[in-house]
Image (cartoon, rainbow, N blue to C red; front, side, top):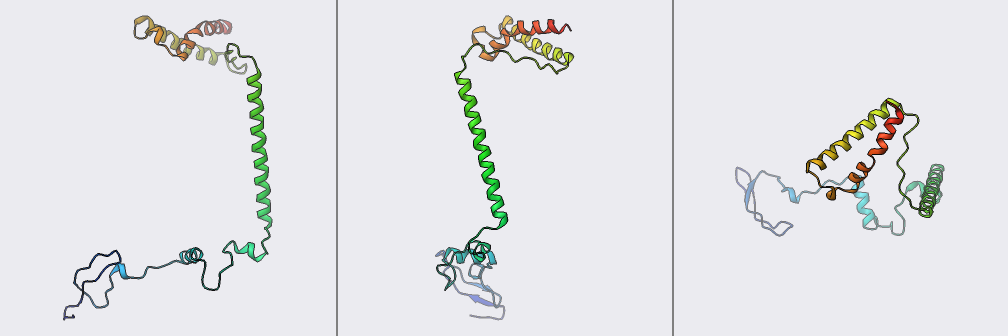
Length: 179
């Protein structure tokens, strides 16, 4: 069926089973789903690898060409990288053993009341005093909420109870700093 205005493509069946309508097209037109797709060199190689390779290549491995060219021996860089990986693994295992030993020592130590962290000796006394005043202000705000009825002492969580209990220590340290 051809006319002066172009060709007609008859109703055909697509790959998915649906039927294409009859339509008028330019001469030489091929529908997109019937056109051959472009394959890159990498895609062709992957297709060969998945299908067992091109004819006559059965039994050959498609591994690294450098390893095949040297008879399966590793290059200097591969050996060096393997040594680095082994050293890193040893270091990681040693660190894990050290952590396990530290955990065992903690488990063997008697559990007593946790000691508050000692202030760092190298810190500036003015900075430490400012930090302690800030903590004291937070404790006073919490105490004000309890006194005002916003919070019940029974509803406090462990951190809040610990904070209130540490007020005397903070006051003592402020006195010690003398600021």
